Amino acid sequence: MESDRLATAFVLLIVFQLKHFVADFPLQREYMLKKFGAGWEFVLPLSLHSAVHAAFTLVICLVCNASLWWLAAADFAIHFAMDRIKSGPRYLGRFNDKSRPGFWNALGFDQMVHHLTHLWIVWALVTR
Image (cartoon, rainbow, N blue to C red):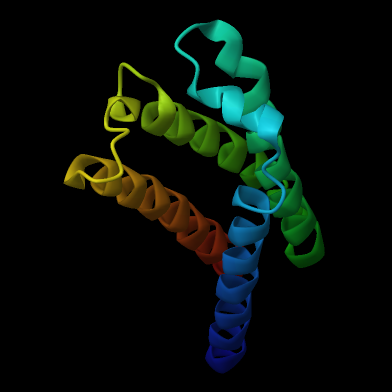
């Protein structure tokens, strides 16, 4: 039924918004903020942060369609890459002055990529 798919998609969109908020803000610990480092010290903190996102995605996928568990791995990889691009001082992290548009554009781009990732995951869960 098309209306069932639409209802499922709507609920999943809400679930992913909640997941994103919880994983990106309340569960992002001080250690994870070391992802902004210039050297390779960012790898473990950013991996841990991305793993929190992936764990939530894995639970959602296991509830909806366990055969799509691999979407959690994709979420990990995309989240890791995007957050490094946003936070890396040689990338978008160089826009760190909150009083300048560059900071807000970088933050907005980061959030857009995360939300587009969630839209793709929801689409996969609803259409398979």
